[in-house]
Image 1: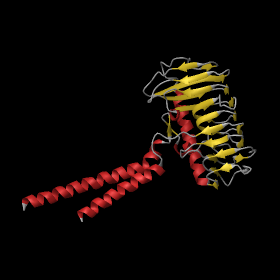
Image 2 (image 1 turned 90 degrees about the vertical axis):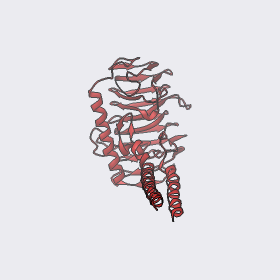
Image 3 (image 1 turned 45 degrees about the vertical axis):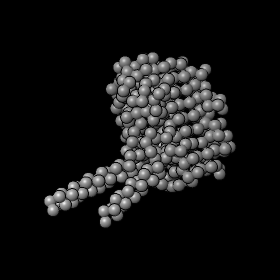
Image 4 (image 1 turned 180 degrees about the vertical axis):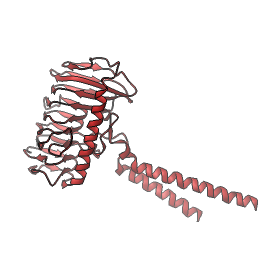
Length: 326
């Protein structure tokens, strides 16, 4: 009798532990993507990272432009591409879409608000359709404001000691490899400007645990030149451009920018040029022409769509265990 009671007690304890672990794993699986994808280079941008392009002009977003942002895209080959959950376009506030032509493809959804001054995409391919969602964009705009404020707080503390290849508050105009002062964490770099041409390549060095938060106090101009993250995930690079952002280059995308680029009040013109990550801008104009594009980066954690089968399989295992006990 005592042996039978012990077995039943052990069975109940084991079952209780199983259920607790199963529920914890299930909840973790369903929330994992959202817990991690919103942080870029250690700075939380929340739902503002759910886009390839987020236009914030005219959205009453502190730190961004007050006039509406006009987004123009003209092919061939321009668009927002990717298989991640963030290949969308967001037009917050009174921001608008016009001047679209050629062959433009957006692999996600174009979101706009009831305040927009117009959405005219001239029948281009927008896989997820054109959707009005004021609440979604208001949240994204607020998250972008918080992200920018957090980045500005980091810049107020100055550059990370030990960064090699460029001086703090210096300018960049030719190829260089910038080495981290903190290889296993966040690196803050402040520059007066970046004006790159003639196939110049700025290489952000480091490893899997290195992140870069860069402030460009002037303009960012690249002509057949690139800013590349070497052995660093593009999601670990944040660049805040206080002036204008302008890329030019041949149709083979000689101008490539890795990371999240935030242009609070300046214009962002890519003719062409490729951003491997995301663009958040609040100036009067965002332009992608002649193949200019954004390639949304796949998160290092599974997407919700991939987590659903895992969650269902786990539920099936739980039900099976329950039936066996019955």
